[in-house]
Image (cartoon, rainbow, N blue to C red):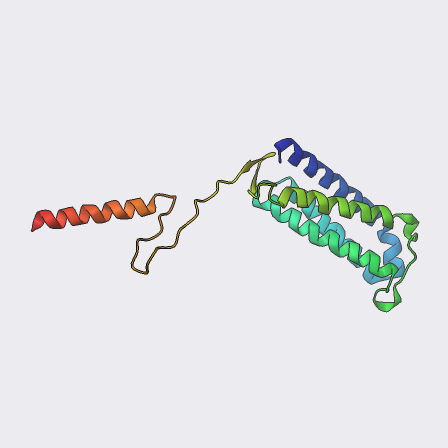
Length: 183
């Protein structure tokens, strides 16, 4: 995936989370009055979404972790919304599909958009080579050479691609030469 596509996905993810945050903050007072535990869940989701938004502006592992946390939060909110409309939640909390000023359905759409953007960014590309997020772009991670098992238990160690095996071999050869010279 190109750096431009990654940036577009991140901007779309940020937009969807900002919309989610706005919807939850708008509905917060009603939920605190009607069912306080639901209101506090809205507060918790708003705090977590805000932290994810901050993390999406970070680089590297922090951004990837933010996408992961955002996927979990959006999945839980999606499931909670559907459960509150179908089987109900604790303390008899159950609403109609178009309750809450009909903001629930767009909220579901924003959650799905965020999850899709996160999947595009975090999922390995079509050639199954993972991407490393760097600043505003991405680069392909170098693939390690496949390691072969020795042909017999007493066979040579698999050679690593980082040069440590070569260094050990050179040190061993030097030690053998020095021992031979001293004899």
